Image (cartoon, rainbow, N blue to C red; front, side, top):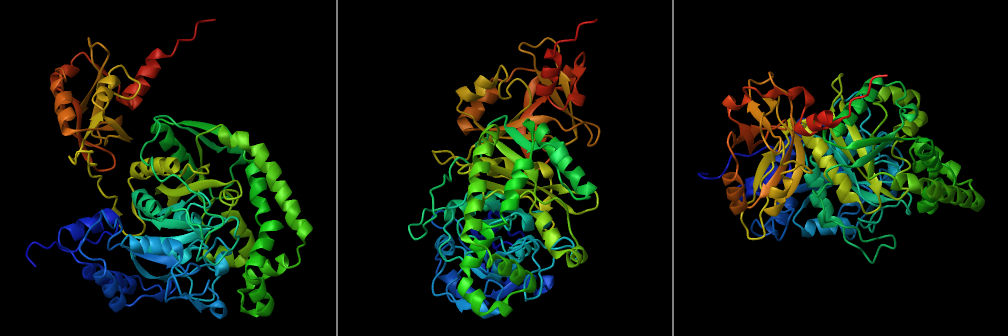
Length: 611
């Protein structure tokens, strides 16, 4: 075993591929998967699991480790049990409905061709109708963070499997929030693509015109990598549409972000969730973005349409023959919903469509007025006891910020933002118009890194970013800039002249103080390291340069500035600008401003005249 690494327990894609590159085997990973299943001991997660013999045979067919040809080589994933996996049962959480799939759903096939391994089929709210995760005749998956809480649905098993670190990612579906609510309640990422981006061929429909396959992952990078593999236009799916998969990571420096007007925000008495949302908005402001409060009454009106008329009837139409013949097979709550739909008329359906079209026209300029929206993923956490007392009402409330999204043809991604004061997960969802998936995911990536959270319920840290390769194959070098080289500042052109690439906004750890240096032209700050806790978190930007450009850039840095290692708030260390200690004599301590840009803006503000 000399030279082969000890097993790295983290299941994010970067960590697993590093393990494989160093000589680790898929057999090691498969053994770990079954060990984790046993340790978690939650019979509600999987409705059908692959056996190790089958998985090892599939792994052998992958050939040598090649993450270029197969970008998901050896990566384990789970599939919601309303999505077909060849040779496995598809039940949609209704045993009488079950059939053995003869072929993979299109998305499953694409992921397998990219080297991913299906571990099993996961539990769900029956026929993907629900946001709570408990409307199943099978054992209910336990919330990965707190088993007294609902796990969220309908993709409950997929979310919990990911949050528990049993798989690297999982497929869900999302019609009304089923790919976002469980992510937010289990401290993971939930990517809900633009409708049509991922083929729905091989998926048991809920609302065929609104359904989309979603991706649960431990990190935004992983969710986006899966999306990049699976987002292919499919001629077998009448609703399939081409959606860009490029542009991820290229984020405008200042985004205009719509948020619900304070008077319109709904948390149903959960003041801790309300406070965590305020904290997330503060984080966005610190990342340099502009927040705009938007009246949200019309969005809520659209949300209400989802369980009225046309779309409830569409759920019934998807399984009409089965429901009419075997109504007793349905979960009691699901049966009530579908039974009510069976009494709707064509007039009800068309009235719903007309109402939606009118709301789309009214909201179009509102949606176009911002780059994207940031809303709470869920308005509150509900316990299993809460749900037992009010099964319909609490389910409806969970969809407050999700039900309108597919009706308005928007994409979204749920991302953890921190831990609430009571220890429960906090999450927001970023929403953007059709085709802007990359924009939402890019901002979600910044938010997740700024949160400093561990992944799901695993305790694993976010993986450290690795340098990207340049066109010539060389690893590019990251550099942290803090002052006059920031975007829009006087010396930023020096970076752009060297073809530097903006990577992200960030903050330092609290072990730095920032000074406005005396006698510099153009004005410059100096960043100096102090004892942890005796400084402040300073806003910075990370840029990338080729090795040659990095050398040229560093050679031109004038004294008293220099390059050293800067510790960022996300735990990474990157080379960047520091100042010699002697230079702060006579300088002004501006640490309290939190960054050079804020200081410059404060100095530039005109003083109000007396009288």
